[in-house]
Length: 261
Ligand code: IPD
Image (cartoon, rainbow, N blue to C red; front, top):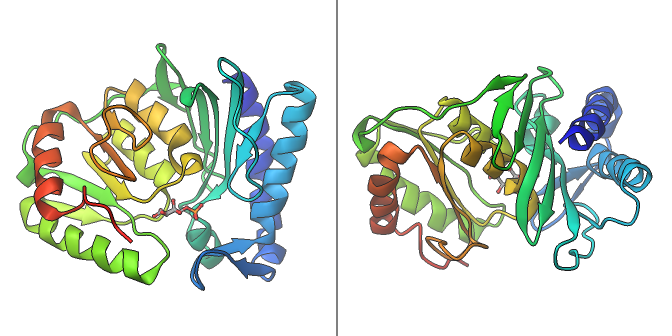
């Protein structure tokens, strides 16, 4: 975790300082709305070179430049250089650098840092999770109809049409829905009790690798699409235990657990 935090601090500083020029140098990826700024690439490169110095030989898997997964039992670093790139582009402060260490595809240490606020979300598997050093605990919600749930949408039009229709079916059953725009921070928000649950279809490993551990260590029930207890193809599920069963039934009825284009 110490390595993750120190590298993520440097990365966060670069994301913040390079924003004025980086948002003028923008490319697109999976669709015309899926943007990548010069900072996404520069931050990932910085993280890769720092990890090479501090943890030589350990593989790094990142959003912008991919990379090989590790050998069994070996540490692999998973980086999302800017999670919430669209927010970053617009100047909305809700974005983060997410860095996690995984072994056999399971996160064991994590740092999710918010460049704009300086907030630091961290976790070590089996030891807990913290915001700026203060231990995190999920909310004590027990009623789905009084629960605040966050979610997100993919970048492809066909997929988001299906996602939005499913979320519309969920909306009457909960207190309200939020779409903040950064998956790692959505997961941290469950950890902090800022929302009671989070579900999103179609995330990549770098989106959840840091935040899912932070939420789990704060007591959340987490089901990842890569795990044996996945609730649906490509589905990331995270909730405080008091509403987890009700939410899993509701998202199934809403169609969020189905395969989507
Ligand atoms: C995106 C954000 C967003 C989520 C998308 C992700 P990016 O990550 O986490 O909240 O809805 O699915 O791709 O592209 O900003 O790194």
